[in-house]
Image 1 (tube, rainbow, N blue to C red):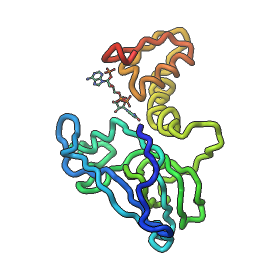
Image 2 (image 1 turned 120 degrees about the vertical axis):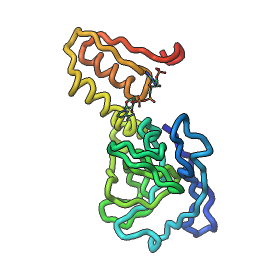
Image 3 (image 1 turned 30 degrees about the vertical axis):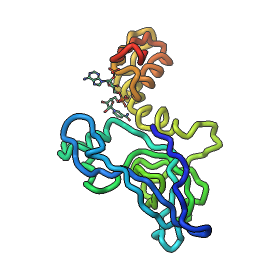
Length: 208
Ligand SMILES: NC(=O)c1ccc[n+]([C@@H]2O[C@H](COP(=O)([O-])OP(=O)(O)OC[C@H]3O[C@@H](n4cnc5c(N)ncnc54)[C@H](OP(=O)(O)O)[C@@H]3O)[C@@H](O)[C@H]2O)c1
């Protein structure tokens, strides 16, 4: 997960134009680790004036964005028949994120609302449709990154694995591979909470 720092420069004292850095898929990486040959950082100017925001949309400052393994599957250039399509070339990639509403043209969202969205652009700012936005309560005592980890898809995947599919009995042995990974750390804790004896493996000693 990556914390995004505050804004790039605004162009003028009363201007509502912000500079926003964003990651763009410039070429697919069929194999190996995607590099700067495949992902490019570009800077765009985004107008936050109310008349620049379509009705029903909101302007959001991204606070946290989640770098998940499934993103890699969207960068190969080959649709694999699974549920996610490939990222479009020369378009900003998207990911689960948490952001703050800074301008709203939707009655369901107010300036200052903290929202999560599975398809936020990998950017500092964006204009977002309301479709997948969910407002969260920042006073609930939960740190914002937790909405992308323990309360996000990795935690949900671990919960499905342990509670729904595995459902181990107290006292039984549970083995977690990739135990230091995003899913593995929660799977191990959930199994411990059920009273299991948990053994995990990791690729290197540093991860233990
Ligand atoms: N993150 C999610 O939200 C999510 C949701 C649903 C499903 N999943 C799936 O759950 C799995 C784990 O996700 P994650 O988020 O925990 O990933 P992660 O944090 O990136 O961890 C992946 C770990 O898997 C281990 N690994 C890599 N190649 C391996 C191999 N060939 N054999 C055995 N272990 C290998 C490595 O750990 P070591 O070096 O320690 O062995 C690696 O660090 C992935 O298959 C992912 O697609 C993830």
